[in-house]
Every structure is written in C-alpha cells, then in structure tokens.
Length: 179
Image 1 (cartoon, rainbow, N blue to C red):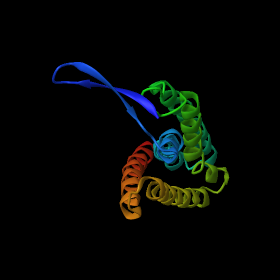
Image 2: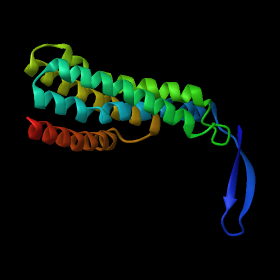
Image 3: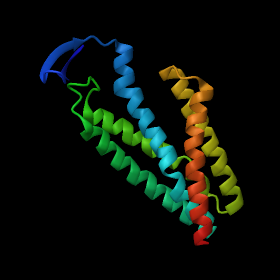
C-alpha cells in the first residue's frame, strides 16, 4: 500500500489517496518492469554500434569491443537514469537503488549477449551467430511481455521486431557507407 498525490486541474488542489497494491503488482512495478526496460534497451540500443562496426571493418575484435563498451556505457546510463527518475515513495516503484541495479543489469545483459559471438575470429560465422542471438533475444522479450504484461505473443514480437528492424537498417546503412 502506498500514498499518492494527484493535482486536480480544475481547481488546482492536491488530493491525497491511498492505493492498495497487491504483492504481484508491486513485483511487476519494482522488479519485472525495470528488468524489461533494461533488457529492451540493451538489446536494441546496442545493435547499431556493434553491427555498423562489424559491417564497416569486418573485424570481429573491433565489433566485440564496440559491443562491450556500448553495453557497459548503456548499463551505467540506464541504471542511473532509472535510479534517479523517482524515489519510489509516491509511485510505489520501490527502492531506487534496487531498480537502478536491476535496470542496469538488464541493459548490460541485453547488450552483451549479441556481442559475444564477435569473440569468434571468423567474421561470417560471428555475424550469422550474432544475428541468431538477436532473434533469440527478440523471442525472449516477446515471451516476457506475454508472460508478465498480458500482451499477445505475436503483438509483442511484432513490436520488438519492428524496432530491431529499424535499428538494423540504420546500422547496415552506416556500416556500408563507412566501408
């Protein structure tokens, strides 16, 4: 249970009310949602740097370093962003340090998974494996949205895939233009 304040726009008065939240709802707000934000951000925001470097240089080591740096930077950024976005007292979203750590960890995991194939020194093998990993990441994200947020699996898969396709097109364009 937590207390919220609401500003009534018609007469500019603040009303306080108590909202009863179930343990399941609190778990979704405080753990699952920050993890999903991190996983989605890590999975999608790191695609362009990794794949544009891979396509431009054909060097798997450079692509891995780009992926590692991007995953680490995005994890720190997202962790602090989530932790500093609110105290959790009015929203019921829980401890900001815990939320920040969960979001940052999810962001790193989402970003590093499709970077790992670039540890393979053979460019084409690494590239194909990285694409397979991205496809698996998109399936997992759709599954989590279906499981925890009552979204249809097909709709969730369509949304995350659409975002991934846009980012892949951008990274392929950049990588091809630079090469």
